[in-house]
Length: 596
Ligand SMILES: Cc1cc2nc3c(=O)[nH]c(=O)nc-3n(C[C@H](O)[C@H](O)[C@H](O)COP(=O)(O)OP(=O)(O)OC[C@H]3O[C@@H](n4cnc5c(N)ncnc54)[C@H](O)[C@@H]3O)c2cc1C
Image 1: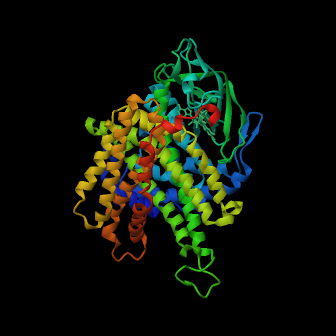
Image 2 (image 1 turned 135 degrees about the horizontal axis):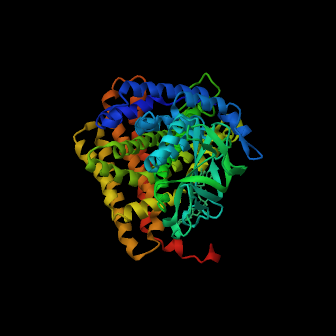
Image 3 (image 1 turned 180 degrees about the vertical axis):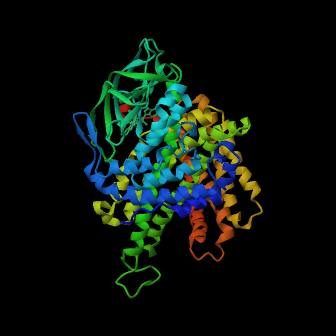
């Protein structure tokens, strides 16, 4: 099994050569104060050391051990406490946090690279800092000054961790029907009562306190999603001087046995009149939680790439070492009993598909992160609103497309190993098991597709879609004279036109056919994702082509050849997806329940 190595070379290429991130940072004064190219590079380097040297070596053994529940307490696998301490001491929890409360104020474009390393090295562990960072974001955006001052510094430092409590036994996708209640007290606090399930790192022994952000309903709240409020509920009360007080009245009833990410605790949380404080306005909790969820959704997409990168590293090494059969063109290593499996076209198909998704996916997540930075930090209203539209449109694509391709990449990697991929010691089966959840939590990928097609595309009558289409069209126009890009711009333009036609088709159908959006959604998101990755690969060609001549490292030439493979073998999937979408909902809805 290959030892996970943070893909620093490619991350630097994406940040500096594809997006020229330092120029974007320099254009956003609040970020420019915190980061310069040298600092960013030092952060990448150090993140690579910690994720590869501390987190990755724990991954397999922690999966074997899992978390242990005992009478409400949860013990994490061996080594996690020490690793968490390393993360705390390095200030990694607050990397993207608000400097007013102790965060480091780094741009998301950079933070996204750290997140990918952490998830690729050890996904179960990586969930803890990821949830804390998301909770901090929601608190920073919606909490009162008092709550922020009291909780954020210790959360950014990681001394306290965060958890997100939405799901209930009867309410997952449909949060409008949650039953958890919050009764107001005279002192401005609330008593929260109810049961939440599947709460990641809801209870553990890594941090001194756990800050839960809980969705609950106030008495007489309107029915449905408009009657949900958000509450901060700490495991231990926090005294005015910042010291910890008595334990709050809630506990972890049990932890789940599950398919993957076994080293993370997935908790049933029972709230029994637990003391909490309102975050944001009454009945606007879902909107406040969405701040966290949008952040987490990109984070989950990044988990997909992290697992995919680990799978690629394993499979690439194995394909060079494993010898089976001779190359169709004749023996390549006649001194050996057989040739490395890398010589076989089908093994190359697998490896290049993986490389296309991993590197294209990393470029896409950085592209989305760039819009998040601009939406958060731009001082010019128009620029900020434009970026907000992009973030709204692209977030569900990043979550679903990158996790679908992430799982696909872990499975393809397993296939490269043949039977050995099914055996525990090579690590491939764990990657498949761990990555599977990314398609399900933070809103299933089906729900992401509905969000994209229904709310973002049809809901805005194509307005958000146009922002993306214009960005691609502008790139095509600006680079029409570039010889190196010529073979790519025509198929990119054709893919964009195909996507625009289908977008218009579904918008037109949606008015007459209530099932049109649901029937088109998943294939539409896939089509969008494949087109977006083609755009990313074209951008990568633009950055790599001038440096490819005389490149003996294989890095830049490898980029150009992988782009060729992507355009030849993967982008054409959009043709069949478009066909399927145009067939409408009839064949899907024609069967009665007893015919399915
Ligand atoms: C390991 C793990 C960790 C988790 N961590 C957390 C956490 O930290 N905090 C938290 O609050 N939750 C967490 N969850 C819960 C997770 O977010 C939910 O499981 C997920 O959102 C789906 O909800 P559900 O399981 O109730 O499925 P359901 O909502 O019952 O959905 C079942 C199926 O129906 C589909 N479906 C439902 N409604 C529609 C619709 N309107 N249109 C089309 N299709 C629809 C879904 O896509 C899905 O395929 C976690 C879950 C797991 C397994």
